[in-house]
Image (cartoon, rainbow, N blue to C red; front, side):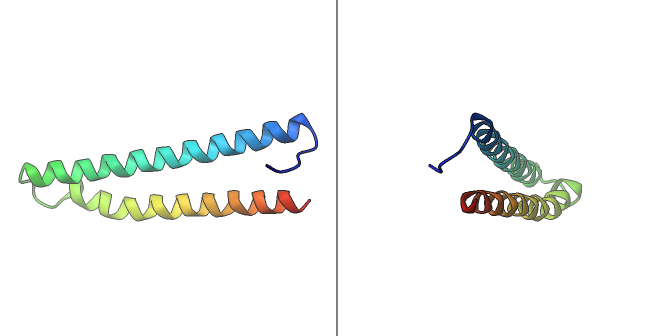
Length: 83
């Protein structure tokens, strides 16, 4: 791993990883719930309405948000390595 200078740097790095992993798990959970919602609506023969329309809009938004958070986290990790 990187050559961290103090215990506070190590704690911050661990908290960043915990936050990042937690966010990814949250986004994957929401996406899987939306997919389950769409499959249940199709299985019940529901008309294409909010049960299908909302996930079709929300899934790309959550994926974009997750990619932005990952990009920022990765940029901070690389910048921290250069110090």
